[in-house]
Length: 305
Image (cartoon, rainbow, N blue to C red):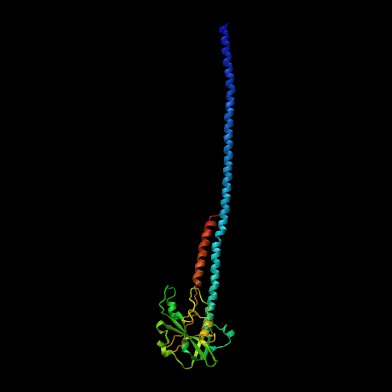
């Protein structure tokens, strides 16, 4: 009896174990599938976020690239504008040089004594007659001899071979007008600044003179102040010069043809203006061409048009 009971219990136990096993297996499969689905879902979410991030980065890069594109376009546009401006400046400078040449080579006119007329006659050739007062000479220094041929040969050099000297400014009493004016007789080297070293040129007779009208000069930066007491002048200050010599505020540069033998060399009116605008034109237009090509190669050529 007891043996049968034991067999019955064992059979019942095996049946329960099989039932439990059959129940656990689907649960495990379900859990495994749920985990795979969850991982797959997370992977899909990550891929979507990654794609969104990549799209955002691309958009930002395109926006920055577009901003840089139009900003860099300012370089060729600016250089083109500067080149065009230099073309106009060159035309203006050539006209000014031509006008100055016409004024300084025109037939001389009688010197007007009205200051209002003189203001409109700078660089105009005028003629006067009178006598020099050598006792009240003024000296503008340092000055070099105005020599257009030498200056053309030495153009672009850092140094010049011209000897330093001074321009001699002498009161000139106009006998026909009854006034005393100031005349820049011309250039003398250092060893000829003192009047006693050039007595041959210190004429006292009445002479006819042709000169170029000049107006007062503004002191440039780094140019020393005029020293009236020491008679050392560095720029043309008509008011101070006229006061120091009891002359009118009228100033002319004697032309080369009015040079007196043994005296200062006339023709010291510097009318040669610097005209380097063609170099600037080539530089700016050259930069415009180079930067335009670089801009085209980077932003246009790479696109499919």
